[in-house]
Length: 619
Image (cartoon, rainbow, N blue to C red; front, side, top):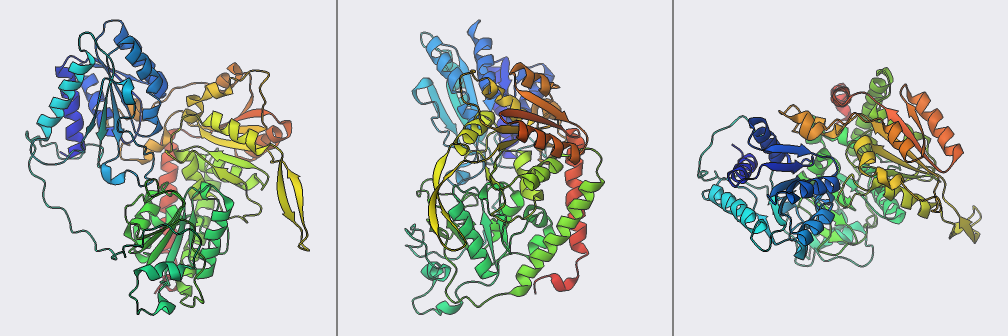
């Protein structure tokens, strides 16, 4: 069987062998192998599994389970802030001598310190709070693995129950894809030797100084000259077929520079929502959908990608970056934290390169092909959504994006909301569009109500700004931002509903929270876990809660929208006019129908691309 599945099953088996009978689990993708192994053990009656969607609550549930009898309890979460949310419970366990074995899933070493999605430094995450911590090496098909896994678990149980000094321990377990069982259930102990892997594609050799960050913007041809021989002809050093990809960035100047570079070179521009660069003559609205079509992706492999900020939302866009032979990464973070999620950055610069000097190597067919395909995708998406009955998740994202103006601030949650916005929102003039932000550092769904509340207060604080009129006259003016909005899934909303519990004397912003309610973790229906046994319990996690009752308990005005886009627009207008904090609960289809809709949308886009005239494809 695949290594991740094998490791998860051995870890669970050894926990059971060492007397662990209670396990608390929070759902996640990177921890999928563990989740399925524990669910199987629960079904067999080997242990009792408890599932909680809030990692902080999960930690304290484990604490309560272990406290009374002093028996060790396993606590399992995925990577990123999910692991960080265990700290309060781990502190209490340490100071009260309660044995908890926290197992945090993690990316393998090659995806760390690269800006990979939902990744933080989890090694010794809890510091001196735990009695012992260990980094479990990523599973591999080689001899000695099973003995190693069993010894680690046995030691963890012994340390956390040690007489005189019981307490929590931490195992950080790296899992490499695939994360779910495959058809091969062959079990060999010890595991056999791994076959040799496929050859790695050759990469362009990089000069010794090419990875040094540059302090100021330079024309792209000068940046690329670092790769050239001393006597190379620099007039044609910039490839004609490029793509600019904008991930999460922190300032509009960076976004504007990315737009300018793409337009100057005649390259398609793909921007994540918090890249704030879905504008300009070369911007592509539906990049993730286009690149998810294998034929389109193969025909549109660029010669160069300029990556701005930290991308990571779409697997198909990451695939484009991964396959590009030349990747320029523009980000102002230091070398340790600089994003390179596909590990194939060629040149790293601190700011977006300026347009190349006297660039003449335009390939009109290249850009035309992208824009023609995007137009076809847009028509296919609109037709499918217009024909759909009721309100859908993509409808909510598109509508919110369409109705907000440049005075608005929009915070978008991780999982489906931000991906719906990335895949389905139209291209807009940057001067008219709202500013979008999100917690994209580790892409957690925790704390988003509070994040939106604080961002709204900051957005609506009066500040000084420079204004230049059409005649070029400049003056200092007072600026106050307009209404702030948050687009959250139901689990993200519930994860931080305590953020609504605020004293009467505390300042309240004008904040409209739009909650897409599909009763559970919808994004898992699009991932490899879909259709696996125990899916609903350990991934879907339907809670069946009345979100209106949650809002009412926090004394926040709210309204439910259950019918169509017209009703949503009316609710947005009313909430915006009313001011203060308001909640709109957008009731969409169940998660299965929403996942089916997304599959249909992708199929429609692929069919539309097949119908394109051959002359629109790049030569």
